[in-house]
Image (cartoon, rainbow, N blue to C red; front, side, top):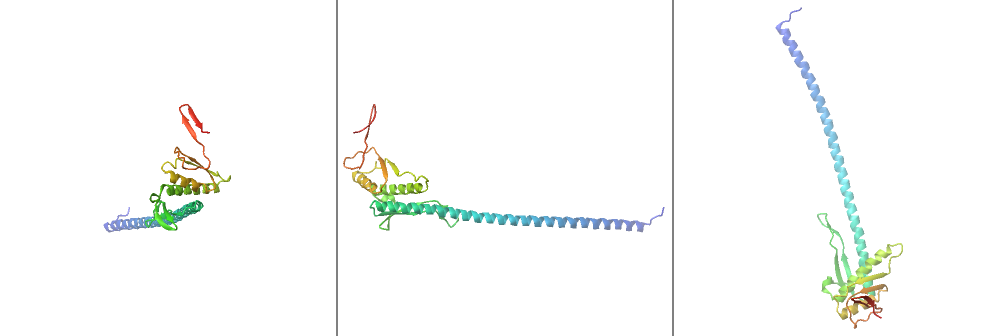
Length: 219
């Protein structure tokens, strides 16, 4: 065997070190390239998701505004029909209904405000009016909603309305005012009440008398 000098041995050691160092550098470089590629893919995935999120948020906003528009259109239809009924009743009152709104922070204000007008001038809320006038306003709004429902029924809906105990808080003059107003609407309206006032003239009246043995229709 050929004897190696100390110098030769040192050279071989350095050669091995250099070779291992180059291999290690290459492996590290390859890993850096691989990780860099993965980071780029992750960044692109994040951008795609952010874009998708922004797109969904935009469509949600459009959908929200569309729903609000449809709701407010229905509210304005109720307002218009109600005011037509008020006009038929000979009333000088009308409703101005404020529907849904989008606040500055993007949230929806779901408070519906009904303002009462007299001859087109703001008068206040229901509580500022006489019982008779407030009653006709409530009835006209109810009739308006019934008319909208009937318009969307294939059969045409029902041309009849039952009003239960709505006159309980009214005095004779107010009941007479409501009955007279309802008589101008041109619909079949049945008023159910426990109140009995001979001073109030009702076009067609059925009186049910309750006794211990049963209920009877008064002749």
